Amino acid sequence: MHRPLHSLIFALVLFSGFGALSFLFPEGGITLGKDLLLSYPSLDDVIGNTKKTKDISEVLKTLSEVDTSFILTDTQEVGVEAPPETKAPKLITGIQMSDPDALTDFFESLKNIKDNKSAVRVLHYGDSQIEGDRMTDYLRLKLQGQFGGSGPGLISLMPLTQHVGYRVTPDGDEWDRYNVFTAKDKRVSHKNYGVMAGFCRFKGYEDFDPREQPSQAGFKLQNKAGGYSKIRLFYGGARSRTWCEYYDGPALIHADSLESGGYFHWHDFEVSKGSPEQSFQFTGTDSPDFYGMSLEGDGGVMVDNLAMRGSSGTFFHLINNAQLREFYKLFNVKLIILQFGGNTLPALRDSAMAVNYAGYMRSQISLVKKMAPGASILFIGPSDMSVKSGTEYITYPLLEKLRDELKKVVLSSGCAFFDLYDCMGGKNSMPAWVEQKLAASDYTHFSPKGARQMATFLYGSLINEYKSFLKQDKGTN
Image 1 (tube, rainbow, N blue to C red):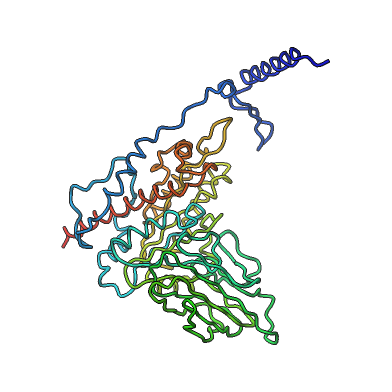
Image 2: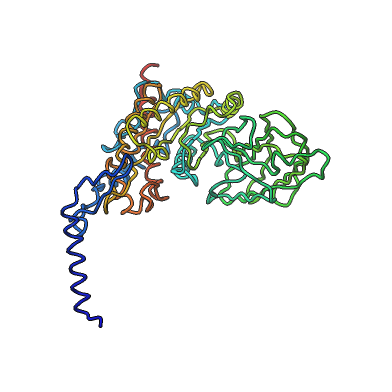
């Protein structure tokens, strides 16, 4: 017969055994093989005596001050030196440069923005940390507010994540994506992936037969935010002409064939003011490779969010260099932001792998500089990321090594580096960000609010460097 006393004794013996094991088990665990470590919670973990999260109160206090500390005043003309009393908050690590001219091309274009016939373009490449236009949207908002410009810029015909201000809905069962930013798609025999490192088609490559009935497909763009006056559609590679109909609301505005062949075509479609919806219908025996569309205004600054989930950033060599160069030239690209490293970190087993990855990024940066010789490059290092150790979350052991190696490569390449890790508060800061609901429970990604905070740091540092540039430029003239 089962008695409560027996259960109590059994529980006491069991927990006493667990407690003794926690006390006796080696703190560093027991190595059972090359890649296998057996660990056990410490006595402190068992009784709940865990460490407190890192204090980031000063970081958060600084964040609340940055937005007003780093703006050009509303009455200040573009290209005029900012008031000398405007200073950077203490905790802003800021943008680091070994070459004082690392951002000069971009800053010159901002200073002369009124004389530019075309918009100044900023391309923000990154991994899932910027997905859904996170971070980029704030940078766009501030730069367009100060220097003019409108529209969200480049978007895919099949976005991985929908934006809150607009929604793209493909029409047709055969639409598919072909990407190169994580690995080259084996279905694609060429390297014409476009500026977004991927494209969409409404027919597969193997389905082409010029004798068959043409297929029909399209997509609808619903616009809640407004702000653009034209849609620029980029495409190429079709083996036959594709009939295209463009509707602005219910009105048919354009009906004509898209060009066949080639790897770099575009067509502009006008959008009436206040129009909430545009749509396209395509008919053809083959589909073009649609590299994306740009929702644009006239002049000012365009800031594109090019989020690439799962990417390590080592894909530029897999894209047709001539095509990429044409994209950058047409866009008048003056700043390219590269935000990568987070997807590589979990795979790093030793310091040598961190050094090797940084070496890969050196070659990618060198290639991008050749493709866009008139653009500045800003590399954003990885944020703090946590791995579970016992009952606690701690910074990945090789994160600082990776950050240091990337910084070394970026600075020696004549580019600028923004230290996201330090701006968060450094080592073991991520748990505090999660606790403040500024980061997700995966201890890797920022929440929307946290992404906005980090974008504030980024814009603050960028505009502060621009103010310094204006001051120096004035002093030399």
